[in-house]
Length: 198
Length: 198
DNA sequence: GTCTATAGCTGGATAGAC
DNA sequence: GTCTATCCAGCTATAGAC
Image (cartoon, rainbow over the protein chains, first blue to last red):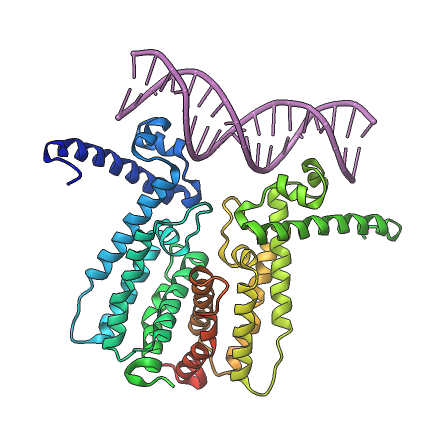
């Protein structure tokens, strides 16, 4: 509707160039931190000049928004890739492990997606909705474990985020907190699974 | 030893001025965020000019370090102010409540103290040690609840930080996560108190 | 100690030639 | 689309008069 097929190769070229800039952006923030994202250094890494960046993104915030959308999509893909076996407890543990690895393995992505820690930036509503929607998988997973209270979903996300936060802040590169995921999952399920909650 | 009593009033004057700058700094970061701390705006709020700031602090990082030291001391004071009753479970809940309120009521202080989220800044070793030492109170409190495994102390800090993080990030000004502290404390104690851990 | 003035740098964003 | 050149704003920090 919007684009004729004949113009597709142009669009594809443009998208490739945009993707290359985004790749350079991720490499930059992974190397120097999320707050170190500058258009000068980004352009240098991408092998172009600063004004050229504006040929593909209208502002720095537009780049951050595209990065947020990518991160949100990766989060959705992660959730979709989780196996559903006949052991709900094992599945929940698998999800927790996957989430923690997802966060710890790419700290700037975690900060962008879950901490909203870039000063002048708020994600677009659509990308944000995507990330929130991904929680539905967790909701179902908890339901299969007999956990139905929305408050307990909040507790589940909190303990997972807590492990991630402590791991990143106080033992970066290690596993002092991330290794506790199994024990924490047991604790959570012992209290809230199968209608055990008070 | 270092300062003669006769010079005390000079020292006191200087300390007052330093304290006034720090007060303005806290007001600034509470209003505009930790990353918005600039010497220009700080000076403006303190009713002085930028170079005058350097009469009291040798650099911006020195200001951040003084702020970190203040925050660490407030954290220590908070721990020291906790009542010790004959009900260890109640005391642990009281501590958790106090911690969460401490963090949520002053987000920049929380970020500075527990998130180390200022780009070029790392706290001085002494101030950092002060904050770590404050964990001893929690360690004792857990011991009085029959929790002795250091791993379970890590789990305890993680779940508390998790509630704080989710509260600040996803429901600022509300109580969606902070109100869950009692349920979370019950969950933790049910699993780990009195040598119940596996 | 406090000021005015400014150095020196880095940031986002734009003008205009090609 | 891509470049050179540049604008303008903000930052930390310093020089030097008073």
